[in-house]
Image (cartoon, rainbow, N blue to C red; front, side, top):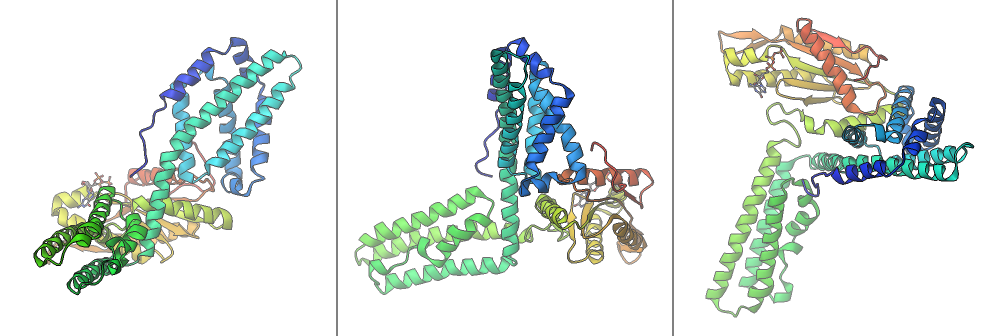
Length: 467
Ligand SMILES: Nc1nc2c(ncn2[C@@H]2O[C@H](COP(=O)(O)OP(=O)(O)OP(=O)(O)O)[C@@H](O)[C@H]2O)c(=O)[nH]1
C-alpha cells in the first residue's frame, strides 16, 4: 500500500525526555501530587464536555464504556503528568496502542484533539486556581503538563494515521468490490473497450482520418475507466503504474511519431506494430489483475466462497455503529472444526479441503442472508448474526452443531467420516472496539475445546473483564 512510512517514535521520545529533564523536581511533584478528587474532577469535566457531541456520543455514551474509559482516562492522566517517574518507552508504547485502538474503532482524530484541548483547559484552570502556588510554579506546571499531553497525543496520532489509512483503504476496497458485483463482466467490458479503441485507431489510420480527430488512448472509454475506476479497484500499485506509463507511451507515440509520419506505408506499419506491442502489454497486465480479483471472488475466499477476514474490520465497525444507534443486539460466533489435522492426516489434504467446503455450505444454509459468514482462518469460521441475542444465537448454533455432527463426509463409496465443530459465542456489549469482542469469542472457543470439543460456550452477557 502506498503512502505509509515506517514509524519513528524516537524524535518524540527524545524530546519528551528532554522536557522531563529540563523541568524541575518541584513542578513534577506539583503535578503528581494532584489529589484523586482533582484528577476525577478533570476526567468528569472531560466526559461531560465530550458527551455533548453527537459524534463522540457514539463512542462514549454506553454505561460500560463510560465506566471503563473514565478509569483508564484517570490512569492515563496520572501517567502523563507523572511521566518523570514512568518508563518512557513503555508509556510511548501505551500511547501507540491507544492510537491503534482509535483507528480500529474509527474514532475521528479531531475528537481526540478536542478532548485533549478540553482536558488541558480544565487542568490549567485548576492549576491557576491553586492559592498556595507561586506564579512561576503555576506557569512551569502549565508548561510541562501542556507539553507532556501534546507529546502523548502526538504518539497516538502517529500510530493512528497508518492504521486509519489501511482501514479506509480496506473499507473503500470492500465498497468498490460490492459495487462491481460481477468482476468477470467488468473484465470483458474493459478488455473489449481496449480492443475497440485499437481497431478504431487502426481504421482511422488506414482511412487517413485527420490527426486532430484521432482519439488518444487516455481519452478513450477504456482510458477514462482506467483513470477513474480501474486504478482504485486494483491493489497492485506496480502494475497500475505500468499500465499508466504504457498508456502515456502509446499516447506519446500517437502525438509525436504518428503525427509526423509521412504517408509512407512502410513507416506506418512499423509504428502500428510498436503500438500493438504496447497495447498487447496493457491487455496482458489488465487480464492478470482481473484474474486475481475474479479468483478472490469479490473479496471472498476462493475455496469456501465465504468472506475473507480482511473485511471483518469494515463490517464489524458498520454493525457496531448500527447496533449502538438502533439499540439492537448482534452476536458473533467463532467456530472451529475439531481435530481437523487428523482429517488431513488420515484422508489427505484434498478431503480436508472438501470438508472445509462442506462446512462453509452448511454455515451458509444456517445463516440468514442478512448475517455474515467469514472464513476466519485455516479451519476457523466466524458468524456475525445481526439482530440476534446471545440466547437466540445459542439455539441457532446448537442446531448447526448437531446438524454438522450428523452429516457424513464422503471420502469414496466405501469410506466416510463424521466431523464436529466447537464454537465460542459473544453478544455485542456496546464497546466500540470489535477486537475485544472477537477476543471474548476466542476465549470461549478455547474453553469449548478444553471442555471436550463438539460443544458451544458463551461469554456471559453483561460480564466484563479486562480482555
Ligand atoms: N486441507 C486443509 N487444511 C488446512 C487448511 N488450512 C489449515 N489447515 C490445516 O488445519 C489444521 C489445523 O490443525 P490444528 O490447529 O492443530 O487443530 P485441529 O487438528 O483441528 O485440532 P483442534 O482445533 O484442537 O480440535 C492444520 O494441520 C492445518 O494445516 C486448508 O485450507 N486446507
